[in-house]
Length: 171
Length: 307
Image 1 (cartoon, chains in turn yellow, orange):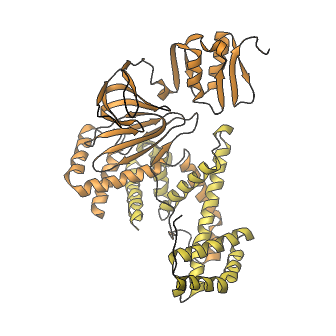
Image 2: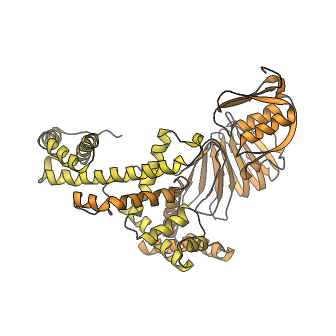
């Protein structure tokens, strides 16, 4: 983690923001999450993000801003949990000694998170074709067979997905 | 730039046809070489490929299941949050790293963006950097087999001992504690130790060890030296101690043998995917027994000891 240096004004701005809105934010999150520890964690994370953006002292509508950030964090937490569950399910089918360490597992979930985010915004067919070819390593013919589409459809959607991935790297 | 990216994607899709021919390959190479921006666009696709290679096996299914599970609850969440879940790109995790690795007992084959094949043996780690001028595979640990694809850019493997430049070829590189061992199965490579001005050529059918300061003599390569790629260990008149030392690489925990049996000689082929079977066949053939304390501690001893 990089060190963040604040000037006095930014620091006071953050303090005020935290004092005035932390309770409200926790309540907002608590309504949306099933347990209070998650809500407390995400409230903290929200303020860390505000801190990293160094924008605490210039906010016109602080609660709106906090809620926007917190919403993104809730979605990410949700994404992570669903991937963790799916991954653990897959892992449970493998022999015991293949179970990776917690550290390795966290890195794998990070990788899956990044790919999953990258695939947001693709249609279901494009995504399925992309996964079959790029991650399962199927030939175009095999992918076409599995998904019951033509080989030229596979080519077209693969190109569309690749283009999408390249362009969001720019965003 | 967007049009050039689209061209690069088009080439990528054509090159990954199962029946791609040499004329397509050379047309693609000409395209990459024609303009610096072409090479840059291509490098970005290679980077993307690299990111995807980081995914664990079965990732496609894991991603599909996770998305399905989310879809089931997505309506409720959307109502609570007041936005669509799809499309949130608020912030990113740290940049992708281009690493390839295997766990103990695992082997994996990767197809790099230029078509080069990279096999990782058990407990190995390598990263790959392709740019407009070169292709570099950095071996940090373990053993790899490289089968190079035709490409105008030179390909090298780098270890702590030095660099190995491929001359259109198939070769393996294994990192030992204090040295690097190179075995060449086709064509040739050039070895440059890191702290020496020496350049040594290794031709097909030979192997050599080297460290940062010096090289050892060339040795003839046994015919089955690269059988690990097919999941086999082939030994012809080996010491049992050496066979056990090799098999131990593919098992988590301790695998060893007592000095009384280490000098026994044997020839055989063993399946690396099931070293328990290999141990059983050793027990049968050599009148030795495996002493086990949990599956993670196994020692081969003479029959009769401790029995």
